[in-house]
Image (tube, rainbow, N blue to C red; front, side, top):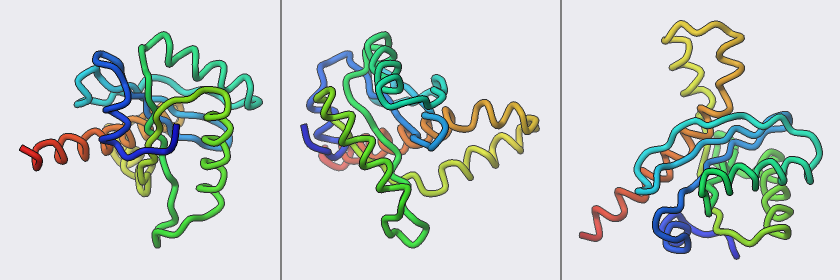
Length: 159
């Protein structure tokens, strides 16, 4: 499977299957899950990174448990829109993942995702410790929701 746009990713999964959003970091992978209608993203959990084979095993186990058949992965562009080392790392992770399992994947620009969720948590008066525990899953939810919104807008303009 190749890297797809959001419309193709949703077309390639079966009715009732969900999309999973990922915020891939050096130490953690934030995970969010979408609803079967592809309208709402919710934060799910954080996987603490170990080695690739364990990370993938845990990720695929969660996908199976949650009936997720496609991934929306945060694409960490630099603020000027250029590809930097973080994109290289996400691309390498994704290519390695696709060697293990063939599934539809979409990259979603994640610039300012962490900032947006951090600001919201500060406004909600969460402690630094609570923010740290929730940040990556919320960022994954932001990434997934942005892609789902783009999909919904695309479908509205086709009508």
